[in-house]
Amino acid sequence: MRGRNGTVLLAVLLVALAGTAAWSDAGAVRVFIGRFSQNDLHGWRPKRFAGVTHYSLVNDHGQRVLRAVSHASASGLYRQVHIDLARTPYLHWSWKVGNVLAHADERTRRGDDYPARVYVVFSGGLFFWRTRAIDYVWSSDQPVGSVWPNAFTDHVRMVAVESGAAKLGRWVNERRDVRADYRRLFGAEPGDVDAVAIMTDTDNTGLAATAWYGDIWFSDE
Image 1 (tube, rainbow, N blue to C red):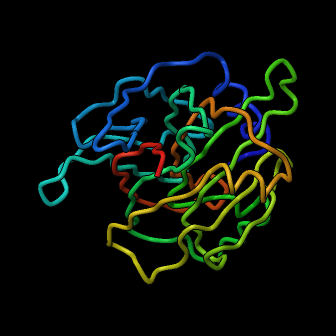
Image 2 (cartoon, one colour):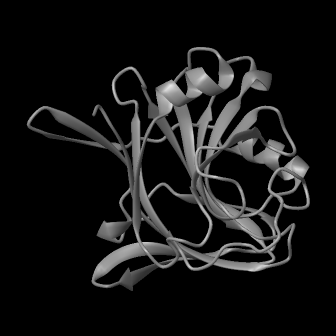
């Protein structure tokens, strides 16, 4: 994703807050961000940077999911939220990718593309220049567990949650302790989460990618 667009994305995601649905079962709390399985895109807004990545709700083996198709493009979907990580620090999602991006050095600006990524954005409050984000990615070339600064801005940390082609075409469930990740990555206590975004982008490499996203939610366990 191009440098100035990375800065723009952080700004756009912090304009306002939108409500989310909470659900409790035997004491567990879920705050839903994306309920694609319910054919629901309520609250999700597009943001275009270079070309258009096409997002659509589709059926995948009897389950409703969100599909993303990128051809040398970079656009995402974001939802403004308000998540108190003291109450619900765990982020859950599922995803599947159809391919990875050959010869993409993701630590460089020319290779800053991903078949799938999930952003978690934190506001700096009145100090907008302190806005930070964690970018959980399905990496094409970095090992799982790798962490590195975004090629364009020091305010974003990249985390390779999945990597390579070993799991292509398979649904993978993810769970991250976002509060712990923030402490480790930025050496500070996080504020509230103000936005979540998803993006499949291939504008810098000029390649193509297809990914699918399942439901996204925060929980207390």
